[in-house]
Structures are given as structure tokens and as C-alpha cells.
Length: 307
Image 1 (cartoon, rainbow, N blue to C red):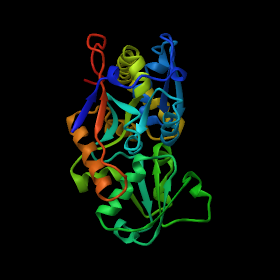
Image 2: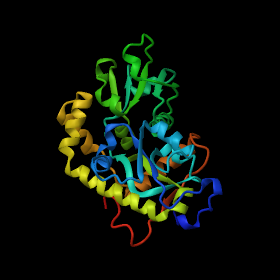
Image 3: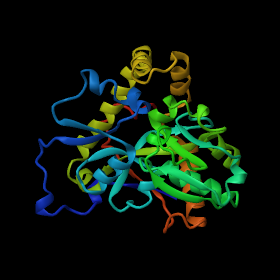
Image 4: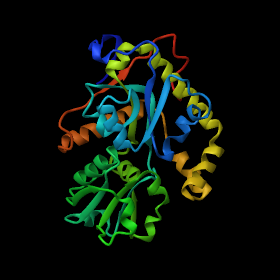
């Protein structure tokens, strides 16, 4: 079951939480290329004075949302399972893929099935990808020794694990095939196991903020829609910027953006529920999770993002 929660019915904030009508919105932004198309317009003239952007890796944004230092942000879907009492999902906005994602990889010196009992280091920058890898291992009955830590320095380190899980820009640009024998795309592996897309992140709003400022949140949703529209109209510039930033082939980067999906349609909501149910079934999350959505104020939102 997926619940739609009216922000007007959320608990009233305490006086210490009170926010004025003209308050700014603290908005998170993943510091990877994957969200460039969503934020392009905001970062190129659309951002109003009441929006303040904070860029950070996914795990850091999760923490900032938990600490209440951000009002709206993309968060790992894994983090959402632990904070459904605090956050509402913004409608029709996600970071997803159906098959290969190219930026969430397991680099290994052994085939997947041969990693049983071997050491696997996973990035400390991610929430969803780590849970996804653990779920894939659990579904296949593979029990490696998993450690969390930085993976970007593995090129220089003499301590080489049997496999590393890498995400984001470093997965795209790290030339990992020169270091490891096998490169496995977690999006592909999940599709083969489940037949479903994977939703890596959703945008959420603090329930307390939504309860006080539903009109402002609705306005922010429309800003995301317009920003993404400008981004789609400027994909050549986004790709050129990414090519310079990561020293990547332009065609590879275009293929990457073509693989990314940013909506949250019914199929992806079903995929989210299957992912959550699998995590719960295998003891990777403590409680069953359902989806609770922010309800935009009718008549104030011109259209839903990407709809």
C-alpha cells in the first residue's frame, strides 16, 4: 500500500521549529554528474533567492536531512526506509535505471558466485547501492566479508580487496577494468534477478516543513520540473561539462545520461516496494516500509515533474 499524506494533517511544529513565511528552503544536491539535468536550470538562472543549494555525496545528504539541516533533498532509498516518520516523498521524481546504470559497479577479481568468504569493500558514500549489493548477495546465497570505507584511493593502496563497490563519478572515470578482472553493473544484476528497475534515490521533504509551508514546497516541485526541462534542452552543454570534468569520452557520457531515468511512475513505485520487501525479508532493514507522498496544493502546481 502506498499512502498519500496531506501535509496539512502532519503534527504542528514546536515553537523552536517555527519558520517564517518568507523563509528560505535549504535544498540538497548530489555532488555527482547524475543529477546535472535536474539542477541545470536552478544553477543557470532559475534559482530564486529563497532557495539555497547544498551539494554533497548521497550519504552526506542523508545525514543532513536526518539532522534537519536540509528541508528538501534527494536521499538514498535505503535511508528513506529508516525515516518514513520524518520525510514525505516528492511525487514523480527519482534517480532510477532499468538495467545498466554505469555508475554503480562491483569491480572484482573473481566472478560474483566466487566471492563467498572473500573480502569486499563498499563505498561509504552510498546508502542504496550498498543495500542493493547486500540484497543481491543474500538472494544468491553468497556470504562475503563486507567492509565499508573509501574506495577512491584503491589505485595507490597496496591493500587490495577481492572486490570493491564504487559509485558516482569515480565509477565512470576510474578505469577500473585496468585494476580488476570483472566489472559488474548492479543495475544489470538487479534487473536479471527481479525483472524490475532500481530506484537509487527519491526527493523528500521534511514533514514538519511541509506542514508549515505546503505552498512553498509545491512551488519547489514546479521549480524542479522547470529546471529539468531546461536541462533537457541543454544536454549537449551538460555532456560537454561532464566530459571536461571527468576526462570522459563524450559518447560514453551521453550513453550514461540516456540510461538515467528521473521519473517515479507506477512501475518504479512497484520496484521500490519489491526492493523494500526484499530488504526486509532478508533482514537488511528492521521494518516493513511503505511510500508516503507529499500532496501538492491543487491549482498551484502547473504540472508534475517529467509528467
